[in-house]
Every structure is written in C-alpha cells, then in structure tokens.
Length: 443
Ligand code: GLA
Image (cartoon, rainbow, N blue to C red; front, side, top):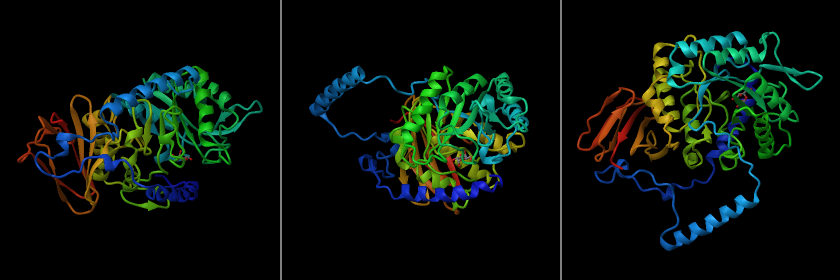
C-alpha cells in the first residue's frame, strides 16, 4: 500500500465494520456435519452440505408451492434483474488502488497493460485493468465527467483502445454518492449520463464506491446505476463497493456482479490497523457468506495484496490460495512491471487459479477450526474438491486430514501428487502459510 494521506482517516472509520460483523450471531454451521479426523468420518468422503430443513412429502409439497409462487411472481413482477451474463466465474484483473492510490496516469496504465501480457498474467486469465479513484477531476458545464487532463492527456477513449488492443478489458471507478472517497465527483444524479459516457469510452467494468452518500438508500442507489449501465447497451461488469455495511450479499445478487464484504484490505497478515484489515481479519469475515456466492454474483473480500511489501512470500501465497478458495474476484494490486519471479509464479499458478475459476462457482467453507490452524473446503466440478490447510500462527504445525476415499490428491503449489499415509494427508505447514490440494473422487 502506498503512502497517501487521505486514506488514513477513512480507513480508521472502517474498523467498526469488522467489529460489527464479528458480533453477528453465527448461523448455518449447526447444519453441517461434525468433523472428526477419523477414517470413514473424513470431510473428504462427505463434503459440506448446504443446509436443508425439509424432508420427504413435506419437501414435495413445499417444492410445488414454491414452484407455483415463483411462476406467479414471474407473471406479475416486471423483470428487474442484473442479468448481464457477465462474471460467470470470478472476475480477474488488476486495480490501481492498493499499490498506487491516487498516483494514476495513462502512462502507468499502458505500462501495466504491457506487463499484464509480458508477465504471463493475461495467459493465466487476468483480463480487466481497472483505474480506481482519482482519474476524474470535475464535470463540465454540461455535467460530463472530466478525466484529469494532466494525468490522462490522451483521454479515456484512447486509453481504453490501447488496453483493448492488448486483448484486455478496461475498467473505471466511481461512487454512488456525490463524491468519491478522495472527493472527486461522484455519480449521484448523473448515473445515466455517466453510463453513456463510460460505454462510449469502451469501459467494461465499473467499481462503484459508497463514500459521500449522505441519506441515500443503498440498494436503490446502486440499482439506478445498474439500470443506467444496462441502458447504455454495453456489457459492463458492475462491482459494488459498500464495504459490507448493509450486508449486500442479501440483496445485491440482482444488482451487481460482485460486492465488497468488508472495509479495505491492507498488506498485512494479521492486523487491524490504521490503514485497514489484514488478510486474516478479512478471512474471518467471510466464514458465513459462502451460500451467497455463485456464477454472476460474488462476494468480494477486496483486492489482492500479493506482492506488496507488507506480506512475505509465504503470506502472499497463502493469501492468494485463500482468495482462490473463496471464489473471490482476483484483482491483483501490486506493481506488475517490477514483480519478482516468486510473486509472478504465485499470481499465475494455473492449478490454483482453476480452483477459483471452477464453473460450479462454490465459495469455500471453513470445515474445521482448531484456532491457529484451519481446514477450508471448496466443492469443485467433476467429483472433486479443493482443501486448504491453513496455519495462521507463527510456529510450524502438522495439520492431518483424512482423505482415505480419494482417488487422487494433488498438491497445487508443488504441482505433484501426494501419497497418503494410512488415508491421511499429513501436511507440515510453516507459520503464516497454507497447503492447498485438489482431491479427486471420494465424495
Ligand atoms: C474506498 C474503497 C477502496 C478504494 C478507495 C478509493 O476506500 O473501499 O477500495 O476504492 O475508496 O478512494
């Protein structure tokens, strides 16, 4: 994360979000099986059920009633859903904020687009290049949004064309309130005009923040922009950024393609600091959200800090593994022009990315929580699952996991199959790191 003063004050305000969310009553996990590390009782052989409360005839009657109700609602309610066909798997790309803050320019964006291709990130699936806050300075007397003429002298259309010429897609940031978080002009009252402008420039992705919203109602504010984007006629991924304050996972699936679930991330493993939340703090806020994610609508635990100075290589690898397990959008937030080979290897690990991009679109559930260590599990298509063995603490730990019925267990970082010992995967996991495997069969 860079040193830009104005981030400080706002990020302090975010701290309460984490606290509020931590205090929420836990739900749903009572419906999950109890896990025991014993042969025949392993999570590998059972999976994590989505909670179900009905059975037998009651379920049949209930199904019919629900079907009739759905048909009735389809008949009377005008179609008002997002339905833009985009982000069927979590979006992948790069965003300027985590590394560059307000220090954005067309020169930077062109160089990042070049680096996206040269580094192999494009080949690994990264697509969107998104300019976050501070590209805009004012509105003209017609109300048109004006990019910073010093930093973007060629204008946004030329920049979008350049990004497109590399086979990539182009994104911008704005805000549902009257001003952005850095007090640049927001979208409030200009939604349709802005959406038309974005479409004319060739924008493919819009991140929409929630600063300066005064008394605005959240869902209707975002819905106006959703409708404006739709009316623009251009397919534009719509990324909601209201920090999880109003539990967007409960109402945003027909408004946006993704929604932030927390305050801002910072490049720190375990901290609640002046600048935002660490990787573990954000992770803990995702535990109960798995049932809300799916193709076209994702929980967004914020952009990646992989490769930024506050995380070690091991921490960056674990952070990336976790975000892949969570079916999180993979928006890199480092300087792609100068990343080390180790960081490039993390961001382009195709086997790990395949877990994130699995078409089933399930978000991982925390299967076991031993405190310092945890096991996370994500269902994958093809009778497979991914498991992540996480060591949150400082000391190395052995994390045993029974996978006796598995046909194949593959270590996704070592790129090799793993032999089980008496049906157990026995991973020695260093502190602040994770082992990630894909398990085929055994469901
Ligand atoms: C908020 C968002 C960040 C970033 C900044 C820009 O803090 O949560 O991701 O977009 O605004 O000012």
